[in-house]
View (cartoon, rainbow, N blue to C red):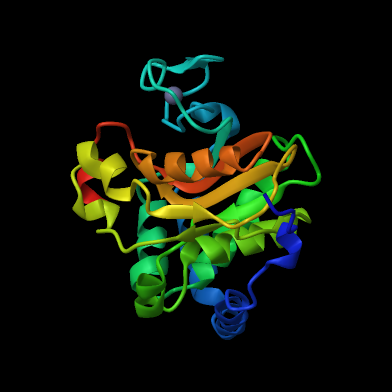
Length: 251
Ligand SMILES: [Zn+2]
């Protein structure tokens, strides 16, 4: 296994849309803030860490989980150590995620990344943690113009003073997970990711995506990072869909 350090393999290409997003954000600073302010005025706030299961991210409330997880995940294996999220996949955050992905409101990616940085700060066990986005297949990225996980992860890394490290690639086109029934989602993404040649022995990695639904994508990615030697893999996502809830079909 080669020992290419992740800092050396950072692609410049992901930074082009990031710079563009920052530039657009400067031109459009108030619309997003107004939406957040409106939600906060209605009582919305980012979830406290004890509002959800740290193993699967389900909303269970304080006391709804133990070190073995919650009722939703206690029988499941999870490929990561801990999950950090901002909120459940429901309004208003679901609207903001949709606006980011499908209405090209890229600035939400920066906002999510900044706030996830605050949330992960207390859970990190190493100041040397690598921040890895879930990759997007080049064709989908080309169509969308950006990978939202890149935007979120890059902003998170900068804000938390960690290293942005795209350690994974997508090797084949897959149907969007949202178009696949939940029971088939593990099969849909199987063998669709690869790790770049890097020795992660002893390293901690924070895997970043926008939404966790079944966790099939995150599991596939986390396993590859472990196989490359990662000591610890944590997950940071903007939102987690309610297990077995309607969100699984809406996504
Ligand atoms: Zn759980």
